[in-house]
Image 1: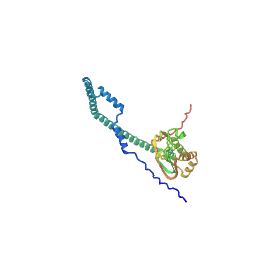
Image 2: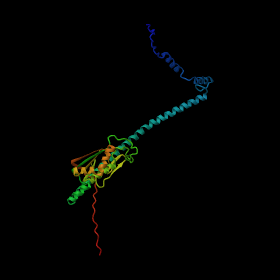
Image 3: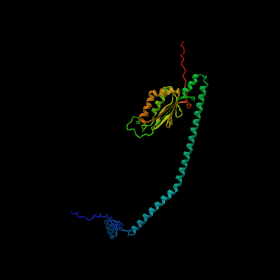
Image 4: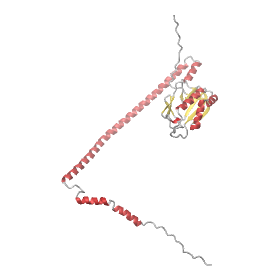
Length: 301
């Protein structure tokens, strides 16, 4: 039995790396001949014709010297003017900063005076209501008008923006009038919440510590929600004094409660409604109480 002829083993030929001297020669060539041949030839021809280098005639030399002197003079004058003007600019800047600080302090003092006067007017109005006969009707008028602070059982409703709001609504109707995020609470949302609480039997309502009255307005200014021209910051805490369990059930079953549930389901707006044993609501500032008087007709003779 003849065996198969044995073939010599095949040896793998290692791959050769490029020679380092070739790479170095290319770099050396680039460094030694950085100027293109055409440019080098043009420079040599220009030098042979006598056009290159410094000016040859006395007139050309004087012109070059005059140009250099003029350039140096312009730079020197500019530097001197900048050095002279620098202290003046710094002084004007300091005076402007001091003026801004003074005006800011004056504005802060005026705001403090306005707050004190507003509190004084509110206290006098509440005192006048208490002294107007002391009847239950006058006390009820003060409560309904928001002129006096109240406390009692009720509900606490917290409404907050969605946890992850997205920019742009892609034509969604909730993003067409001021609010770019579909998960943002809007002024009309708070309007419906407050109206729903009033309709459900609330006796007094406040949002983030601001008492609401019959003259209160909930509006939007850009991306901010204003209550009586005062901006609110989310989350929005709505307190309503009344029969807590009954107020909670009525609000949930009302059209405005269903509307709030739809916002929660479709736009991930966060809400929390709870019954509280004792809520304290402040009085509304600068409440103007108006009363109507019957008109008596004079008899004719």
